[in-house]
Amino acid sequence: QVQLQESGPGLVKPSQTLSLTCTVSGASLSINEYYWSWIRQPPGKGLEWIGYIAYTGSTYYSPSLKSRTSISRDTSKNQFTLHLSSVTPEDTAVYYCARGPRASAVPNEYDYWGQGTQVTVSS
Image (cartoon, rainbow, N blue to C red; front, side):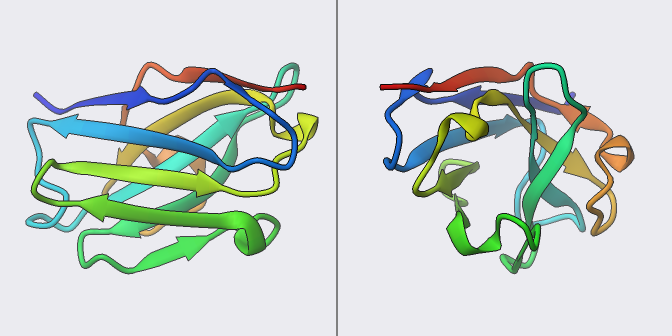
């Protein structure tokens, strides 16, 4: 059974870097042809895809967030990590990690999700 679990600080100050880690069990980040994404949902808004790291290790980011986003992985720990720099209150959201069977920016195409973690950007 595939499980994903997000972890990281719930409060980040403006201009700092938000860092979240997703720990995966029941699947390998690098063996099968899956894509591992970060997705967020701001309060009162819909899901927004942030970016993915593929089973090959290649990455692809949303054009609107690309300049501030980095996704990396540690295959020895079966974890992947989101770094979002220069955050503002507009980055306040519930952040999810998810697995999908294809390279996609459409949140509904991801079949396994973590439970989500609330991140608030505030001084």
